[in-house]
Length: 308
Image (spheres, rainbow, N blue to C red):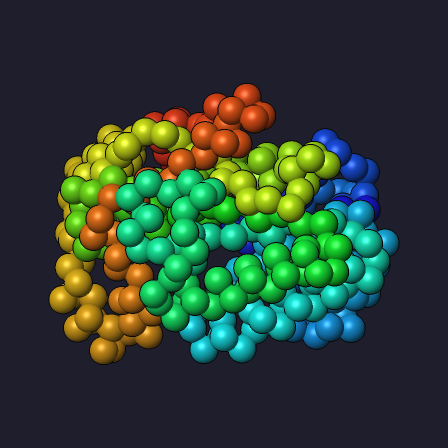
């Protein structure tokens, strides 16, 4: 049995499709789980409830923690430590291996222009410090409790049916609505995006590779160094629209944040957008002989699927 905790998100659903290549028993766990494959076992659980998580994990060989919480620091501070501890405890109890799908928030701000698995964990933001604390819980359990686990880290997501990804929301969805796209802070800066179908293939592969555990892996991400302007132009070309966009400056974000809780949450993360943001996945790519999807092909596939 291989189990996905938080199965309804950007990675959970494509991951379920990939896991059938490795096992005939896939369990999907969420508050309201929905089948991806006909043979999926659905399990309803609240991941902040320790007993429910134990029941969800029981019988599992590998557990994938792919949950995405509401983008709200108060929710993160309340729920993330509980979810991680519940998952760790359940995996230790039932001798399950754990794959944690992570983001780049815990990296030091000056590592953002070129991130590798060796980049320093030294966050300055509330969200980053919270993520660093969760990672510390995981690695402490590896060292002290014999947990077998790995971190599968991703850049910002983009891909088919991704509802919360920055590129999907700010460019693709805007052009679809015949509106101007927007970019945060500085559209002349390089920005990496991880294609969710690639990420799902990689997470499944890592989970089913015994030698991959007790270390961190960057999920496969194109090595192309596209700027915000490049993304806007190529999406516009693929969608056959004019590449119209506006840039949300730090000042605009600060002012808008006075009235919008979502924008207010973005304010502290602008250090990722006002400098180059390059995510290096060469460790994974070389080890598994994997070629990440190029941006042009990823964008074309999103446009094709949304048009269909």
